[in-house]
Amino acid sequence: MARLYTRKGDRGETSLLGGRRVTKDDPRVEAYGSVDEVCAFVGAARAEALEARFEEEGPREFLIAVLDRCQDALMRLCAQVASPDGRAPVEVADADVDEVERAIDRAQADVEPLDRFVLPGGTRLEASLHVARTVCRRAERRVVALRDGSLDAGARYLNRLSDLLFALARLAVTAQGGRDRLWEP
Image (cartoon, rainbow, N blue to C red; front, side, top):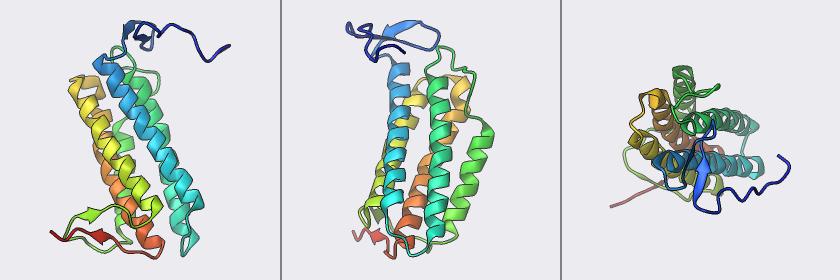
């Protein structure tokens, strides 16, 4: 790319993969933009993990490795959603969903069971993972709203990813020597 700016979007349009022009408020643009936001917030959480103090290094290494794999899958999903037919050279598949489920199981093995809702804000890392989780839920809603069957695995991925981000938030606060902030109604 010779220049970062092209001026092609100045009139409120953008291109999907393959070149088809659509308005910037097209539901597909909204959906891939939301997936892109998740990727950015996962990256912010990763940066927090690099700077956070942990009682042991194992959880940091696990968190960073998992978040790296999540960003890769989110980039693939972005490409898939940005394609007019929901097909791209690289896609999110059921194997990605399975990988997320394994990571959830591993993260949950090191935390206490819950019987109440959690309030984010125990640590910066934990809070950033919760922000990523809520943005992920929004992206899931945007992808589901497309009603594109070729994106079913991507929708399942986002559904599990939000659960994973919750589990990682709980693991992070525990690994940093803290405790969940439980909501007391």
